[in-house]
Image (cartoon, rainbow, N blue to C red; front, side, top):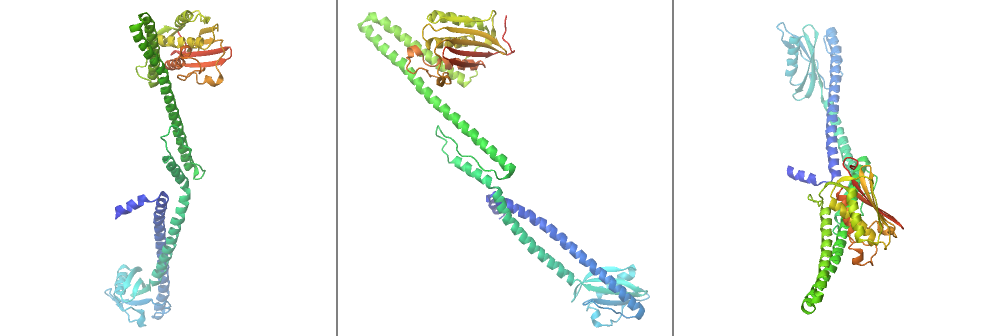
Amino acid sequence: MIARLRRAYRRMRLGTRLALGLGALSLVVFAVVGTALTTYMRDYLSAQLDTQLAQAQIAQSKSIADYGTLSGKKYYSWFYAVYDVSEDGTPVLRRPEDPVDLPKDVDDFTSLARAQTAAHTELLRTEHLRGAGSYRLRACQVEPGVVLVSAAPLEDIEDTVGQLITIQVVTFALALLALVVFGRRMLRRGLKPLSDMASTAHGIASHDLTESAARLPLRADGRDGGPEVDELRTAFNTMLEHIDDSLAVRAEAEQRLRRFVADASHELRTPLMSVRGYADLFQYAAANAPEERDRHLARLRAEAARMGILLDDLLLLARLDAAEVDAPLRLQDADLVELVGQAADAFRAGRPDHPLTVLAGPGPVRLAMDPLRIRQVVDNLLTNAAVHTPAGTKVSVEVAVAPGAAEVRVADTGPGIPPDDRARVFDRFYRVDKARSRDRGGSGLGLAVAQSLVRAHGGRIELTSEPGATVFTVRLPVKDGRPTDR
């Protein structure tokens, strides 16, 4: 039974449980207040009755002393008994002047008179007289050898206390019922913001989050509930914003992955088809035109090398994205100026149609870096400047020292990059000129690889472009705040 009640209580709504808890607490408070009030009233009425007994006995004592009889018996249902104390100290009951002055059983009166005689002081006692009910008895010495015992009924006190208890029970029950009913309504109104948030959560749970473009348009609105509920609502909405942003990032990552896979498949399909075609031509030439065999073999090797470079770049990007412990960086102390000079010499040899200017300080700039990867970054930036500008365009590369970093700036005086394309030039397989051939425009991975390698070194790469001035700036951090010049 108790387990059933517990289960039923746990299934109740929070507002109902709080209202019942408040009712139980109020019931305890009402019980304490009612008990204290009832006890105080009973003690107060009993004290009044004792006072009345004392006053009545004073008047009766005077009457007995003066006239030898009881007079002034004005209280209805009171009993009176007069005892004469014998020489041996035994109280002897006098014959009553009126038969109704004594109850049928006078044992309690005699016992109290005997106790008063022994104590020689006034005594008070509450007794239940057979056939009469509960009475308050008082014994006192009227004069030497005479003891008066008076008894006042407690019926009026019990009736008054009973009526008081009845009034308290009815009043407290109505107050408790009103407290539970109206308290539940107030609690439900106060907890309504929580119910709204629960409804919002159910709406989110029914929302399909498996779609790649899934968003959470639902939010917990309203300003009711006080500062605590408002704080919870703010935290709830902040959580939804975070989930929404995470879903957006996931959707963007999935879209980027799909685009990357599609672009990679498209880029790999061309060299694979070329390899297959040149392999067929090589097989044909080997059988029918031996003099063409070497030329087809060279083209076959070139396409295979191009595909190998593309696969190496994809593998490098994948390892950098995964942030592997064995990331493809082998850091060592190297001179950035010397490295840029080597890249410039290679550029002049391979791109004689683009004049190159090298601007560097008088001394070396030594950093902790992977020379091969930084050389790859500089080569990619220089190649990008040559590929996307017409012949005769001036190109410059500069090495500079800044607080806490070393900078490499690659600039050209070409037509510049359109504003809409600047934010995407570092995306993989992205080309500013969609019509450019792959032989001339590359695979679209050069800048993506350069950015990933710079980030792997803890640096960043920036772009500023306008017609006649396009600058890529590579910033590489140093541990002690400045590069080493020696």
